[in-house]
Image (cartoon, rainbow, N blue to C red; front, side, top):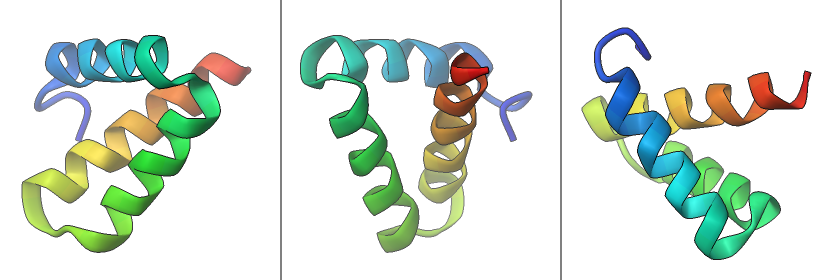
Length: 56
């Protein structure tokens, strides 16, 4: 998934974290993952993976 659009997802996640904070960004991505499908759902999942990778 992240291989398909790594740069744009990472940039979007970084912007979201900068604007709303990490916890709010994670909640928003989780909501988007639950409420969308297809490509948008894949992007939300990729964004969550990026956030969680940064935690380790």
